[in-house]
Length: 212
Image (cartoon, rainbow, N blue to C red; front, side):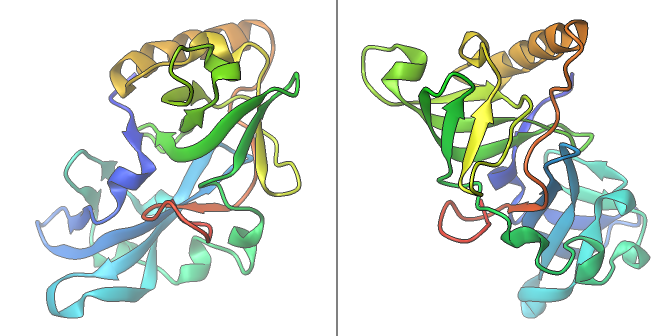
């Protein structure tokens, strides 16, 4: 698996055409939780055009999601906002700050960030974990957990799969290995490790609305 990224890291990343023209920068990342996939990005302008743009970038128009830029074929890749976020879709629950529970009902902590792969898949979360979840000496810790069949609970919580505590990691490089092992075991057991709440807007701010 290629290097994983945090959704918050995508904010302000330039959107560049294959001709080398920087046409926008990422504002927020939107993903379809049920598909476990990025659906696209809302955008800000650059330079004198700084501020929210009336255009968005559908994931289907992305050429490559890189460490330093999001590459697109050309300006024609930009589309109307509705191409990324359907009306009211992002109002079904905020991920940042959402409570995280295990299938056994143990409070695992709260969501800090969303982990994505270069192919647009949402593979996990960075959470502020409780001691009850990770059983560590110093209370709450920031850890990475895999995305299982995560379900929205009253729009304000995510449910982690049973045994998720066995696949936590302290950093993204080691989490990459954990995600691969978790996915392999889930596939062998006939589970789908990539489902969850639909239409959640993630990107820049760890606060109130549906943005991360």
